[in-house]
Image (cartoon, rainbow, N blue to C red; front, side):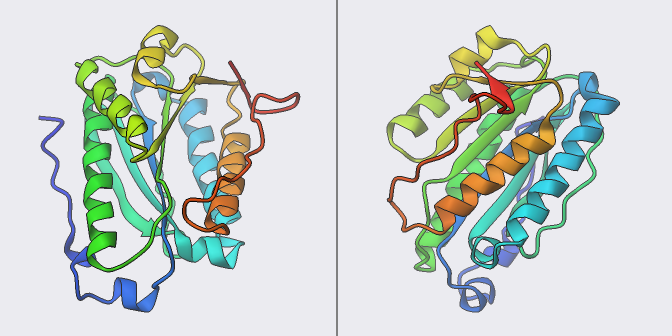
Length: 230
């Protein structure tokens, strides 16, 4: 089943070398990426290019490269943990391919569970961390049960366990996305994935250069010339 995906935690074990080698505060970013069949062709190519841009932009900031952690969970036919949480300085962008249906609900649930485990690992190792970001990008609507996932999103936002952002591509089901996300879903203009990921990397650089708990002003992506609309 889509929910039953093993998560390899061996490199996160307390007493390992990860945190002694890099004791910086962590800024976790979970990407939930739709790779269903409708993303085939130019959309998936532009998404892959955007992820590479994301890496290049973040690694150019030496502090962000050590503080921002990326995890990628894809959903297209099944839910896959493509990239476990890893700092940007060691992150290698994957090449994603598209196929099948859209188990979005299972992906959200899986991602939130992985994030919970990662936060437990930070605490066990005495590592401070910023409020995590979850970024859902989809061009469709869920083909599985999404109501339980929506409840988890609302619970997480209410408790400030994470900030959940939703980006709708092309023909995404906005009615359902509005029920999943507490925040207003943003509509990507065309296939401007690279602009989206530049904005995301710039935002995370600002957050990672602040103190945990500080409010950081972010550029409005829906401003004139921005990559999104509402």
